[in-house]
Amino acid sequence: GSCQATFQSCSIEANQKSGVCGTGKTSITIDDCHVSGARGGSEKRTGFLLHDDSSIDLKNSHLEGHNGGNVVMRDRTRGVLRRNTIAESDGAGLVLQGSCQVDLYGNAVRDGKVSNVVALDNAKLVAVGNSIMDSQGVGMLAMDACKATIWSNMVMGNGGTGVHCTGASTVDVRYNRVSHNENTGLMLEQSRDAKIHKNVVFENGNVGLQVHDAHGAVLKGNIVLGGSKSHSIPLMLESQTGGQYEENIVEEKSNSLLFPEDTTVDFSTNQYCQETDRAPLVSWALESLMAGCPMLAHTISVQNPKKFDIGLGIPGHQRWYTPMPETAENGDQATKDNAPKQWDEPKKLECEGSLPDSSLADNVPTEGANGVQDGAQATG
Image (tube, rainbow, N blue to C red; front, top):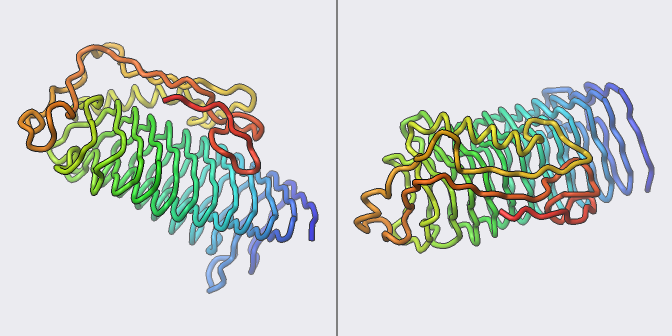
């Protein structure tokens, strides 16, 4: 069947099944509601459960405490979630399955026991300006054949990996802060054609950015730093002989695995920084992200897409990077031509393109969830 339902300023609490369930072609609007679960027991209760071709517009609401997921979307469902708090799920905060299509704008998704956001099967996800924090497991998991556009988010403090892309997933990950996750910050594992551009990755417990057998990956303009733990590694490439690695800044540490012996990747446009540069570089990079990307600070502009401009010419620092490492000079790990070079003069990279905002009609950077047309594409 088909119906329309609107919930305004309601409390939906302590239900033994789902708080709200949509099937058929039901269209649901939720605004300023509090939805909490009845915890305990064996029932997989959810806050919102959508099947078939149903859709949801969920905004300004607080969802918490469901052991089957706070929001679960399946089949061909579509949804737009804006400015919500999705918290303290005993499973995952948001679960996307089937061929569903979902846009996330300016939400706080936190404290999921398994994960905060999970995209499976053929789901399509656009996530812009969200905070993905404090899961006991993975912050965001994209797997199977899903497509995910992850722009301008804060992914912090998760007990596992911050962003994990695996299987045949295709992801576009840009302008994110990925930090203080207990395991790896950002991991590509057998994903396809991933675009990892201009993210700030630092202070993660294991590896900052890890790439394992990822087909066609393009990593450009990222700042990838280590952490305070002695075993923290900025960048690790495993079974990775192809892809593009351009204009990234990577912290030089004795245990950095930058150059697998069998790699054919050209690293000549990448740069090294030292551990002593970490704090001022992070400060500058985050200020640049905030200035160019207000959505990262949850100030989402509905009308005016922002231009993103992140420069590598840091005021007051004419020389940030160390010379090419001796191992590369000797050809032990990489040839001289393909190794990172010394950088002596300020250099600026510009990526001027319309960033996605919370208008569903404009500026979403991929084939969008919810029928959104392609917006302006970033060029970097």
